[in-house]
Length: 417
DNA sequence: TCTGGGGTCCTAGGACCC
DNA sequence: TCTGGGGTCCTAGGACCC
Image (tube, rainbow, N blue to C red; front, side, top):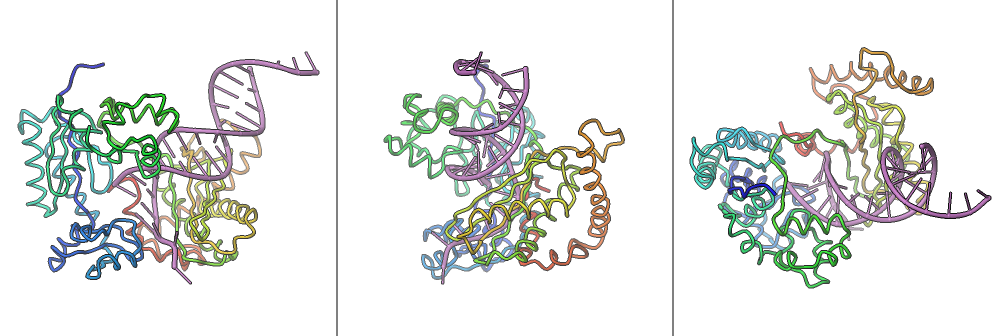
């Protein structure tokens, strides 16, 4: 146990970010119930939430709840710009900023006190500057640990500030619902409810053995630690992503070879391009196929030789999807296809040194992917100058999967900026 | 006429090795 | 011949988060 620390961790979280951004960009939308999205609600303004509209809800249901709801398709590049502007404001107060997503970050302000005053003054100044300079409402939680700061910012919403002093932590948490704990979703909440546990206070008081039995040992121990305020996580730069993927919802479509080829080609191209851009290749390829009724299956393969060529990845993905469909002959239609890669490494053929491992066969595979990688590099270069749609495999460029705007996909990709 | 796209982490069983 | 224990990797599925 280290020495007791002061409450110097801030969690800054923009309120209903996409919806607030739309209200900022088009003042005629401000103070009105609006939703960003098309088929599904990506974000709802607080005026819409008052009617029960929430993120993830199908559009028809949202309109049912709120007949006056205004639907906005979304301006994703603007969200990226506004999110970056907010992060610039945060960085003006401390260099120790950990951006978690487009609209959310942790800050450590222990070293900023001499310049800017106590954490509560810093939080107040940040909120004012974001409001005045960017035009968006920001909620901030201040506490001794990341977990507590995050809970505090949720309690502060909308447009508020909550400080949890170190001697008040247990009291602050006790009455809050367990669902506010990071990692407790609907399933865990339901499990806990069967044991009569609904508040964080009840969770903290529950015997460890009961939680282990209910949720498994790892999660049980983690929840107890969080509920009792043991949170060793420090604030620092995010690790490089350990997986990359792309997916496309298709509506209900017959699973024809043409559909598979064009959709998987498009998705594999997106993933392979990102791998090459990062100077990486991947050993494990996973395909997910979803059927009507949200039933889904995954198939994966781990290769000896990492891949990053579009055609190689397409072939592997097509093979995996074919195998999955062959095992589910009764399913005639698919609603979603996804391609992702993990086991990400620096590819051997980009290194100047001779091959260090693998037999003749592995060397052959590597050369095949390397030759394609050379061709892909030419494609990448053209795209860098003239845009992504300028060149590509014909069946892929015209795939239905490309209907979702690229800006949205880019926004959702992990690394901001 | 059940809903977007991009991620992380955990579990459980099996293969394989020492 | 049968038995024991531990570690690592792989696969499939699921919960969860923004």
